Image 1 (cartoon, rainbow, N blue to C red):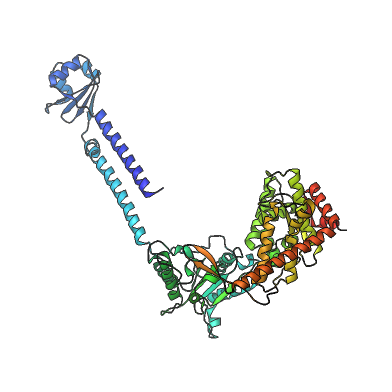
Image 2: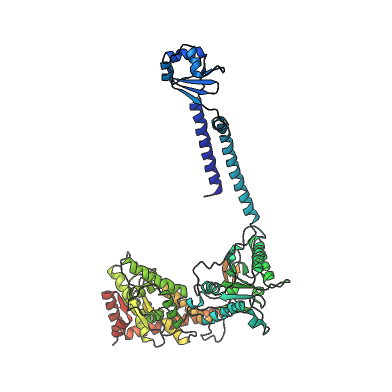
Length: 601
């Protein structure tokens, strides 16, 4: 709830309370009629008096009709004696019900002073609360330049290096930092200085933040963490002020660790802005550079930063003395994927048919976050079917869900579309099977997932760092297998091959302009640069002539047409296998690897 709305509600409540108090006084505060003692005695004799209250020298009589009468005794004896002197009998006095009230200080305060002070007290409380709210707003304004870094708490769930699978080199680099903090004398005796900064680089989901959490769990020193975007605000100078406050706080707790996540938010190369927020970002970066390695030595504070865009960082940020170490986290290989799956499989009851090694083989290119999401999707799928354990089918189906999207059960193809899709996917699978340099086919399906009407899953038998030209050419031919199969079988083409054509043409152009795998020889063409001008824009600088551009187009066309003729030759020669694969897909909708291989036995 916002402070303004709180103030409004409290003010309304105060008004209501005051209204109730004053209304009570207006109802119960009717003034009695002043009469003489003789008139009061006459009303007692007439039986009109219900009760008489005596308070000091004042008599207040309540009549049967609800009205009240008041008179003064003038200090002449007791009330009974006074009324008897006016002819009132003992029985009449008894029926009148005389009550004597003692005039104490407490009664006076409650009866007279407190009702008068209560509205004033309520107004003072309301005023004090509103003043406190205003002071809080002022304090927030004064603390605007303070750092929002949080200190890691041991009460939270800790992560150790043992909980992080894979990334052996990265863990070794970071474990040295932790050991240096725990036992600095062992290194200082050898003249070694503690690194000032460690930059974690790698694609999203490879475990940069997770490794830093492991450092926080292992290190026995204060650990502050903040995001790069928390430095920059709309007010000029706030980011630099927050950097100064962060490092001042860290120096008081030295030795300690500062973790800046997504540092590229403030660490981009300087000189690319046009004023405004870009100038503010550059001021923040300048302050970070000064604090890490400036005129004043910064001892005992280690900065760990994470980014998936190291190419856009300012060179001054990457020089030795600031970020002394750069740790690169790549996508995990098959052994690391299996280890990561075992970590995330803890707490999930798996059936014996779940082979994590097989899952690791099918998840080439998956990051650690993808693998965690994969097993989570499998557990959700098992829970949706009210199962007590996660089966192998749940895991394998979740792989396709993560890669391609959920199954589109609402999308029902008619018989003609189903047949075209079956032959299209059969063309992909057949060309991949017959090309010796193509990756093995693991699954063929005509079940719609995501934007795909069907799919052919081919996966490498082992992780590769280098790719040969023959493998690229096999991939080109396989991509055009569905296009050629439609043309050869139905004598017509559909829009189902649009994504295949896009992939094929993009790959062919990469072979020519980037990898030098064409007749143009060992040359690369064009230089890509990222320009930040009113938004993000990818700009390619042409370092070749128009004649060379025409030659590039001719080479791309030659590669694409060559791949198409290769696919056409395979499909024409092995037409019986094309029909067999398509008919099996029309019957079963999905063909797994073993069943696919059996079709060629």
